Amino acid sequence: MSDPLDRSTHWPYENGEVGAFSYQRFGSPTVAAAEAALSELDGGTALLFPSGAGATTALVLSFLQPGDTIALAEGGYYGTGRTFEALARWGLRVVEFDQTGAPPEDADLVWLEAPSNPFLTMPDLEAAAAHPARVVVDATAATPVHLRPLEHGADFVFHSATKYLAGHNDALLGVVVCREPAAAADLLAFRSRTGIVAAPDPAWLLLRGLKTLELRVRRQTQTAEFLAERLRDHWIVQTVRYPGIGGLLSFDVTDADAARIVETSTHVIVNATSLGGVTSSIESRSRWEGDRVPPGLVRLSVGLEDPEVLWADLEQALTATASG
Ligand SMILES: *Cc1c(COP(=O)(O)O)cnc(C)c1O
Image (cartoon, rainbow, N blue to C red; front, top):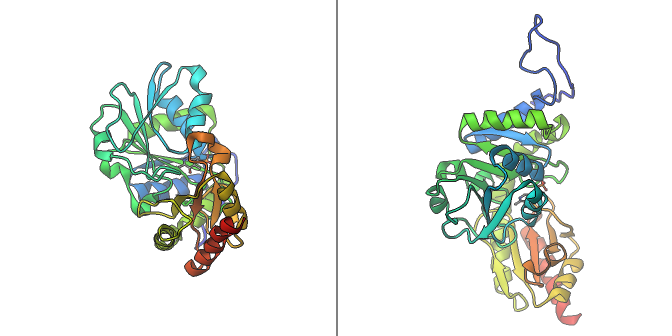
């Protein structure tokens, strides 16, 4: 059965009393249905936000004070660091650290990424759980199909639901899943007051996408494994990063020019940013991240196309760098 889509911004009082839903900023049935599904997937209490970056903003403003320090996994999603930069003048401090080891002692919040985008490292969840600060795991690229961080001692799971959870490049959304119901209540109160809340339409698309999440991610993982192996054997490719789970991988060619040729020479794989959709996409990351990444780093988000077709497309794009 299809889920109902309720676009109302208000609902009648029940005998003069506020019912389960009153005003959309406080909560709405379609968003609540998506949150129930997400709560189940990660084993906590989920709250939906209008984007991943919006969820990041709400989470840190809700739980941190001016002067507090976030220990951020280095080599993680570029945009998360940019969001924190935008909040620096409100007193938020950030230190980057190698998430394969223990977080720095003075952190008030630990922010990990499993696996990191685009370096594809996995965090040491045990070392982070031993730290007294609260731990957030951005599991956008792993998805709950491969990792449930709350079971490894994390306090919050974060997802850009724009990616695998919605899965079709047509909904911008973010999720925070809380281990403690009290923390979820605090975050819900903050969300209601600040208005950083998801709308019903993208929530409905997310519900639609979640029905095939496991099928999509398992197939994307299989194809990514296959492509990573082929890429490792290719003479033009220098480094391949793939952690063995999920549909995201990155590899290096000699330089920025070669990366440009690869990304503009594919025909099936779309030359575009973002990840986690049913259509494969590829891009050189230095256009966004500058010298934070090797100039020849190419990120590939594996979709649902035939694996052999994808490899043929990649192979001819790699070969084009040799003749160009
Ligand atoms: C895309 C992404 C985000 C940000 O999410 P938006 O929905 O684009 O705001 C955060 N973390 C990771 C790992 C991402 O890939």
